[in-house]
View (spheres, rainbow, N blue to C red):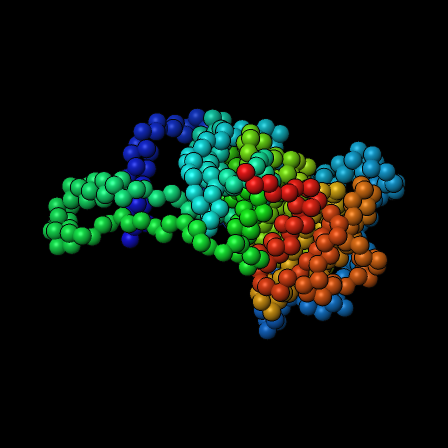
Length: 514
């Protein structure tokens, strides 16, 4: 009830605010493309000369077109591109060659063929603090900020982009502190409650407003004189037990002296193909259709995370050189893309990311290239990615084996920074579809770059095409490149109790109480 009443008040305020905004003369700007996802995908296929895409396999093993789960058939092209061999066939043997030659080559390939290029002149973001609140999470005092990143839309005011983020920092430790940025749905964790006297004034005013809008409400309130429409929420529990490995990851982070922030991907770019002419992609493109190497949603979400890091660099209580990025599933893909392209991020926790994340593109096990390119998830990627699911086209057929790069090289772009790959088990809902083994192979194959740059990899002896996943709950956590498969489902929460001490040790961070 309370939430609905507050929502009604907020709607009234929002309507008043919208009424104050000046009208936009849309005739001065290119008309905004309004397409369905199918129309947008068809337009990209036409640009690329593709007549027909191969459909992705079914996740239902009873269907005739079910996905392959036979390891004997999973590697049609088992030899991966050599991460330490340049385009001209020269072997990379020094860090200088990596940074100056090979890494830029890989960035170029990933941008062109998979994730798309960020335009040179993306509008600037101005961060505004909407709410600053002193709260308690369990028994930990925190300062929580609700922030809005307003993107300059003066070049094309038909599209608005306002990035939604919440930052939570512990007040019981000396700063500056590490911060874990997470893709998700921001909310203030425990809003401070008004005093009884203030609450009484709020209820009196609210009743008067309701009666003024509908006089029949007076008889109802007279019938229930003690009823208060707005009531207090439960207060902080100062006797709550200390967080454990079963506590929410946010509480574990705060207990370890870390802060966290949550950024909303959909406030940056919609998670559908119809939205590609809107959001930050549409705004930067004046509401028009993408070109084949323009950025997709994963790269757009990563761009938004980088703009959030811009803000964190201005926060004195945040150690901006110790900011990590985390996500699960599609947001696990986005976390990996963020880490790979923005070297300012200090660490990453990649949860159950599948194809487009840590799983090898060349593998045909569960989710396939066609599952992304030929389905409603094509918008995650650059338009050029559709070429690798082409059944009929001006250039013939292509598959994942034709990609010039693969996920082991995306992981290598994170080196030498701490990179933790996390999965669950199919029995608990982290489906075989995600191809955990394909992700493990990629993680092993990224190891040579970590070693070249003076970091430690997984520490296994066999090559990527011979290695098998370690047993569940066996963490390979001795290096900057780490792997752990927990015994839960489609989440990375069970691995936070291992990630936090692992990352703190590598960052040389120790919690210091005030």
